[in-house]
Length: 270
Image 1 (cartoon, rainbow, N blue to C red):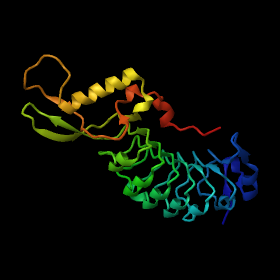
Image 2 (image 1 turned 135 degrees about the horizontal axis):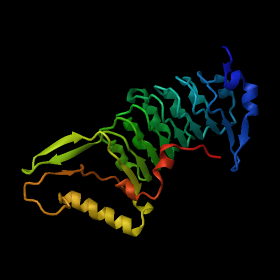
Image 3 (image 1 turned 45 degrees about the vertical axis):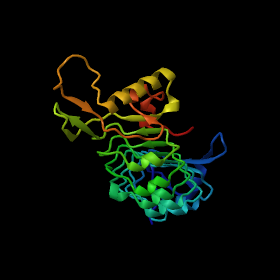
Image 4 (image 1 turned 30 degrees about the vertical axis):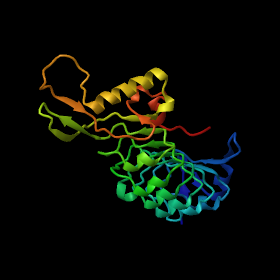
């Protein structure tokens, strides 16, 4: 197999990869190969069984090797901004993975294997900026998951399993055509889609007391069907978001204590 060339024509060999490994402040072995014009996943990397963190972001990789699951030592994997359309089933073997970034690729829902539900140590999963409209239902087993990025995809409905993920504190679904319910003056309901729905769910513990109270009041108004506006007769038309409950999570994103820009572009850990 020809050696993969990186930035400025440098041949990416196992020897060079070993030299590129650095220790993080917390003692982890990190290999950064970001923005090196890599088009094929360098299979020589699978021999680096002592690497804990791998950054292959901002490359041109179209496919992951079927035996990616052999990289069992990984706890942190960043593949954002490549050209991936699918993920191999063997990804489920990376049971020690805690952070996984697949944002800004070409992933479709059919390309996500059910084995994603085997990543039981996963705390952060970023699937933003892809072409997804559903997720594998097996992901309801990801009870350690705390942060989930689904922004800029094709979701009409939020995955139902979000309700059972008790440790989930942040869910970004900005830029999806999420459905909502519209009522007319006669009480008729019709489900529609909004092209640009800005929804950023945060855990109640992330809000100050004042913001939490405002959110609770707003949610009560929506649940009761109160428009919150003045004047007008009984035939006013108003829109109501679909009433769903996700344990400990609230909207809107305007009260989030974490800047959403930080969420949308996840920066490598220094």
